[in-house]
Image (cartoon, rainbow, N blue to C red; front, side, top):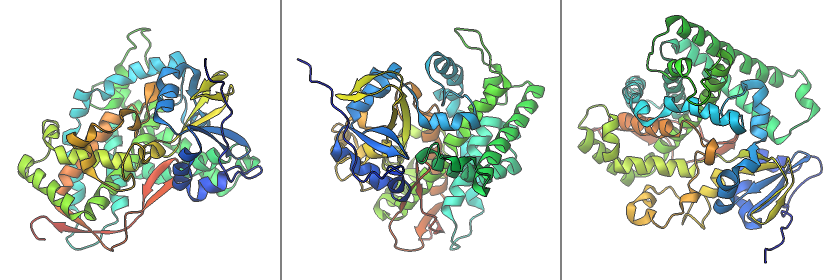
Length: 449
């Protein structure tokens, strides 16, 4: 006999009207990591609204894959859609499936491999400007590198440095405003023309203007420059024959920039920060790079041989996975034995899943060797969700992983990055992502240490 569905337990500390907003604002990572002990599906308050947080990998698999049709895109997409439009990241149902089919050619493995020379060249150029012994702001350097990479890969010749710099300035304003609206939805405060609210809407509008200008230039040229924009202009859906409109291309590129710039920059920063605090791991990485590359730039063909570097990347992705992604129940349903009402806001935290000690022993310790063959067999595949899962998995997941490998290989072949202080690696939860602290590092040329 089936067990009757139950109501979701409510996380402790919920406040009238504010819900758990204060906890989410002050210590979001700690708040989410604590939820698993209250149940597989736990109810929290986003302002006056309730949200259901999935904390178990099997229940998450049910929501994202098995019963995916019962859970459409959620609050995060609802909040961003008026500002970044209807991309494959915000749509649900058949329109989402069509957009993903049309976007897929831009991120197939062979296409991503074609970007490795671009990636290596950009990171070599970035590192060439460093001076030995002079501290650098690693977070800013890696964010700028990731932004330049994604914008150049998306829009090729149109990605001039002025445009990339302007996008870099606009993104933090947009993301900060988005996060506040997510945890305090529906407040009339959003309608007041404060400096923050004006900056939020202005940044979104200007981002779209920059991309629109790039599309106009690309359509006038009408040649394949090897970038994502060229593919989106030329692609036709194999089932419907539809093509992208300019507005749809703006929506897709807007979403890809938001997803691929600051996220990858943070992951690169955190990888280098952890390596700087792990002399043994750093030596192993340098030895592997010397053996495989011998001083030349890395290529796609080198990646399978860069075994330890792949472990470094995968461990960084696990440790610092996004802490908040959303869905919405399309109908009354049962998830993990818990009753879920129609239109309920659903939340899942890759960070929570990837830091759960039930699936990852000593989960808060950075340990690349947990991905060694003899240890990886004991890990649960469903607990590996740094890019989300199911039909809405991040479309640029292959691109992001290759980008991290190539940038780290290029920079670490030339430099050691030593921490300026002995302070441990810090993690900051903001705008649904895990960010590094902006602590300087000191570059030291390889061979001089």
